[in-house]
Length: 388
Image 1 (cartoon, rainbow, N blue to C red):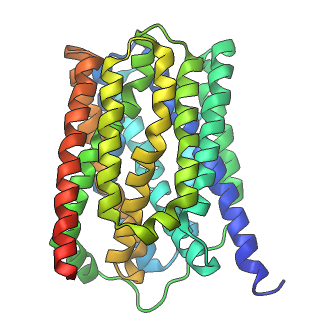
Image 2 (cartoon, rainbow, N blue to C red):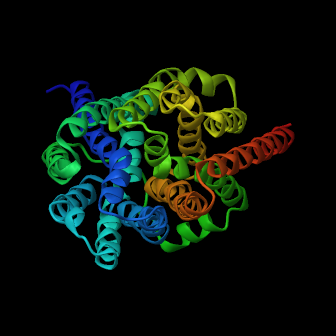
């Protein structure tokens, strides 16, 4: 095989892996809250369970990233993580005791949540080697998520949620098989060490950016946890939940296709201010909606809001850290926008849902997004002045 053909083949396998792994996320994220509700758990308990993943992310994701950079491998770590969660998925979601479920979900998330940022790290390396933009690979995740959310919406409406665990196991097992054929990330220069991580954590510019991005992401994580329940409370069925998630995921694809052109014309901070403004409009519309079917068209703006938030965050951190800390940088980003944001969004979202209802939840999300809009504009102006 020619040297030119190897990156192309490796890129194709990576796209297949991204498609199927995000297909598993497209099953997990929309329907697990409904599985928990069917088990008799309250909104508060569901919020606590969904906050475990972000809590674990804060604690272990930077460590996973550092291990990856230290040993200069991403593939072998992903294989190990998939082996563990594929095995655990067979029985974790059948546990009826809330106390035991807390422990099981905690262990599951130690290995589950870090897979996405490690896959991002592998994708960044592969895209750079192939001369392609990250978004051209990541859009396959959006397509996988969309197809999975749609098809399982119809499946569960006809067969119920009892088959959730088996379906999730099958998707994870496929991902595990595909992962053995992935290429690994190539690293240039020396191994990462503890002093590199200390330098990363004391970079004021990076930390301020991560805190602000976590604030905005918390509104999105609250919606991830409770949109399905919100739709059910308005009388919508599981197929509407599936439509809403499918439309959201598909709306990311055009943004990922044109992201290279957007980055050539605008700074990440300027694009993030636009994302925050669209988030504000989105949550304000959710605050007013009373027909569950209207949630679906509102989800069309997800691509601009979350799509830009995610792509710009990945791009900004990639520019700010050296190549040898690629996985560590993505791990730190995940710890903030997935971990801290998830804890705030899921836990406080659960409290607001239980005590005040979904209207107040989305009003709070809208206020957060509006505040983030002004903060991003300020950071962009500061950055522009420093360049001049």
